[in-house]
Length: 86
Image (cartoon, rainbow, N blue to C red; front, top):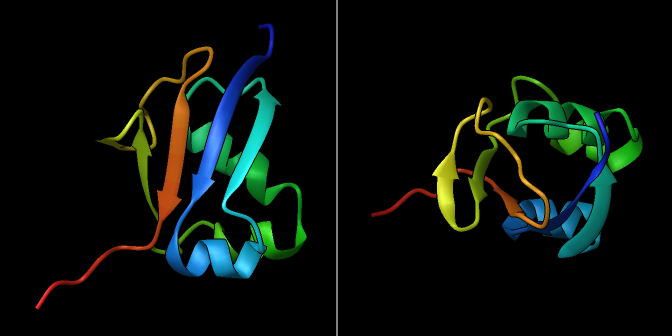
């Protein structure tokens, strides 16, 4: 499968831990779960902050998405920690 270009955005503690808020990426991932696995494979802060079992939410084109949500060319994927209200 050919790579697609996606725009990643990181928020809150993920942005702080990675030291970036945005990243343009070419990926062979077909869904959010595969994309997260590809980021974890980069190692370092990505592996620590996005590791399986860590509470991380995702949105694709500003709509909440689970790990099976498909990716499309040019989509925006945002990762952020769960938000608590009160």
